Length: 418
Ligand code: PMP
Image (cartoon, rainbow, N blue to C red; front, side, top):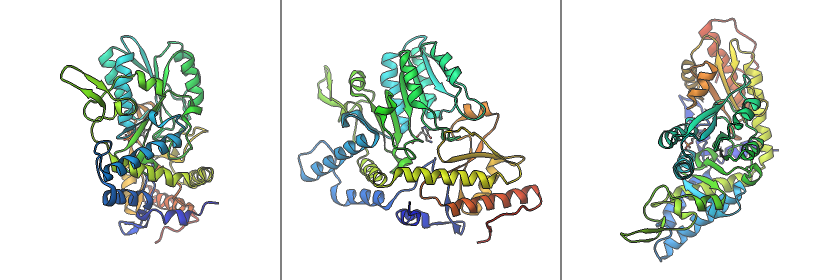
C-alpha cells in the first residue's frame, strides 16, 4: 500500500496555493515536481563539491567527478543499460534525438532512405528527422493512427515492407497517453534492417524501463519528467553503435589530443559530451532516480491507473465531456474536449480554482490534424496525486461546464466549495 500523504510530504511545492486555492498539479506530462532529495542534492553539490569535472587534480574536482560518474552508473542501471559507457548526458530528450539525427543520421542515411515516425510523435521526434531528411535527401512517413488513439499495426507492417532505415517512435504519447507496444514494433522493424529509436520521455516517469528487454537501438529521456531537474537527460545506445558514430558537437572534454593538423577524439561516453556539462543537473537526476528506485513502482503504476480511471468515470458524467484517445494500453493521462467550449477557456477557468492542466496541441500538431482538433485539455497524473484531487477536479470541471453552458445541475459527490 502506498502512503500517498507521506510521499507528498517529500515534495515541498505541493503545499503551495494557486489563486488562493490549494494547488492541484495535473501537468505532470509537461514537467514533474521535485522531491526534497533532488533539491537538497543540488544545493549540497553547490555548497560542498562544486568544481569542474574530469579536469583538475584537486580534491573538489575529484569529488565532483566521482559523483558525476557514479550518476552515470546509476542511470545505466535505472534503464537496464549494459555499461555506463552507453549513457550520454544531454539537455533532455530533444537534444538526445538531435544527437542521433546529426551523428547517426548524417553519417548513415542518404538519398531516398525512409525514416518512419508515428502520428503520435511530439515535435521533438519529428522536426530533427525533417531537418535530417532535407540535408541528406531522405524521406519521412508516419505510421497512421486508429480512431482509439493507438497506432495501426497493419499499416505499420505495410510501411515496413518499404524497408525503412530508421524507425523513431514514442513509447508513450504525451498528448493521448497511448502506450505503444514498442518491444514488438522494434523487433518487426529490426527484422527489415531498420534501427529503432524509442522516445521514453513519457514512459520513464511511469514504468520501470529495461532498454535491453525493449531491444531498441536508441532510447532517450528527460530528467525533468522523472522528478529530476530541467536541462539534463540522457541518450542510451548500444556501445558498438555509439563507437561507430561520429561526434556531433565539438570542443573541450570530447577530445583525447588536439593539434592544428588534426584531433583525436575521446572514447565513450565523452566523445559525445563537448564542453562543461550540467554537473548539478546530473547530481539532481541521480537523486531523482535514487528516490524513484526506493518506491514500489508496481504500486505506483496501480495508483496512477486508479487516478486515471476515477477521472474518466467522474468526468464522463459531465455534459459534453469527450475523452480523446482510448487506447487499451496507456499511461495515466486524460486528454479530453468539452463540446461547445474552447479548451483554452476551460484551462484558464480551472487555473482560477488552483488546478493546473495543459490546454493546446501539446507539441503534437500533426496528431491534432489527424484528430481534426485544434487541441485538447490534458490532465496528466503522477504518483503524488490523490483521488481527492481527482474528485475536486471533476467537480470543478462539472461546475464550470454547467455555468458556461447553463445546463441544469447534475448530482455530484464532491462539493466544489473550499
Ligand atoms: N518527447 C515527448 C513524448 C515529450 O513529451 C517531450 C516533452 N514534452 C519531449 C519529447 C521533449 O522533451 P524535452 O523538452 O524535455 O527535451
